[in-house]
Amino acid sequence: MYLSRQARIALRVFAALVLVVLYFPLVYVARLSVNTGVNYVWPPKGWTLQWWDAAIHAPGPREALLHSLQTALWATSVALLLGTLAAFALTRHRFFGQGSVSLAIVLPIALPGIVTGIALLSAFQRVGIDLSLMTLVIAHATFCVVIVYNNVGARMRRMQGNLEEASADLGADGLQTFRYVTFPLMRSALLAGGLLAFALSFDEIVVTTFTVGPGYKTLPIWFAENFARPNAIPIVNVVATFVVIVSIIPVYFAQRLVDSPHGTAETAP
Amino acid sequence: MTTTVQHPASGPSSPEPDERTGPPPAGTRRRAARFLARHRRVRLGLTLGAPLTWLLVIYVGALVALLMTSLFSLADDPTGLLTRLNTSLTLENYARLWNTAVYREVAQRTVVAAITVTVVDALLALPIAFYMAKVASPWGKRALVVAVTMPLWAGYLVKGYAWRAILDPGGGVLKEVFGSTPGFGSTSAIIVLCYLWFPYMVIPLFAGLERLPDSLLEASTDLGAKAGRTFWSVVMPQLLPALAAGSIFTFSLTLGDFYMNRIVGGTNEYIGNIVYRNFSADLPFSAAYAMVPVVIMVIYLLAIRRTGALEEL
Image (cartoon, each protein chain N blue to C red):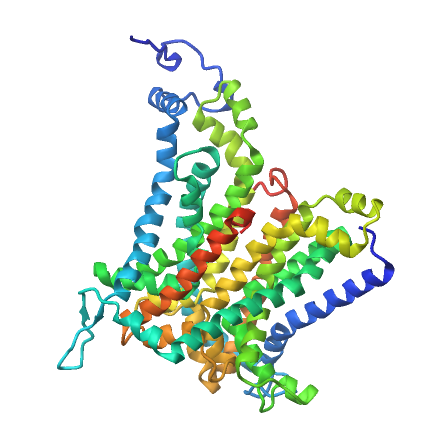
């Protein structure tokens, strides 16, 4: 479609405006993390590193960060295993009830978090399971599975299976085909799905509210508790800024994976 | 009928044809691989078994538990210290929801908000996604994909509180710089929800437009179609699954939200707020109200399944 010069300029200006709106809140938080005032009052005044110093020595954020990492790592591991198996089953086989299964499998992310949260809470109560790290990981893994399934499933649909047939014709058995052909081809989809699942679990608060054990604070829960305390706001801003800056690393890797459609050469470890 | 299968691996000195690709497979492994190669059903069972069990036992099981809980009621407890459930089934929670005007209004408001957020995000995301996929240079495209996805990592609550600082009628950015702000209320809730779910709409639309061959657009222009006609007759039909996929996120995430209302919504309430406020004191009532988004989403998913949206999530 040949767009006129004006249309191109209009699109560019519009994109720039949206990006400004998208980033302003994040930049504002970063600016407030080095602000001498403690309140959210415009315009920010002065520069200081005292909040960064205070945040480094505070035990709360560090513990919450570790809890979030722990939860996200467990949930992502479960999701990688189950999501990959589900993707194999639903793309390499035709079976009775397949339509229903592929609809049911996306339910955990298609239904709102509050439904997932309260449904799991009702189930744990009916069965008599106390809330703990395990219930939290189960809850997170349930929606993370869908993310991995979608990523790996999309790759498998594109791969068709000719390469696997070729591998079998050359005498490889199923396990060798998986190890030398299928797995290398889907490695980047696994990584991309795993990263996305990790990010979703790391930032999850709604399902977490309903399924977390008492006293176990993940980072979002720590945020929710400390935003309500005016004295803690500068430290909250520091931790938030820190997480955004660190997240550039996974976003960068995710982008490299998307750039190489089969992820064989450049992304091999 | 008996078939004798020669196992080359178990023979004393028969070299494996695929020895170069790895260590010689053990006899049992080789037999297992053969067995799997011949039995599709077993292969299907082994791959589908674990995820399907997880899905059925944990997720569908939880939804059934939710439905059951919604049919329970609170038992009279003379001490008032413990909340006990009366597990005989009753429709009284649903009757209470249906007969209370506030709950009907809140449900209606939530659905209207979910539709508004979805439409606004689609209108904002379409031009950006089009620019990213069809106009920007390869470098610009890559930079924009990163730029749009990055905020997803920045923490949902952090962004919510940043917006609180922007919308605050007492010293917020909008008030100080532009002199006016919508303040805390339903308008602000919708603005912030549009902001939060925007990337979930852009990404599927961008992926959908990337798959749309440029030659199709060129052909449409060559045949005399103007930009508008090309958009509605060529781009939109192809983009529908991606649009439906994005709308699942924006619609469902808004339908279940309650934190943003507490942060920027003032006294505004959605279904989620009432479910959240009551779940520890009256779980059956909360469960009944939570069934409303379940029913809406299942109808929505069944309606858009035919577009192929579920494969694009």
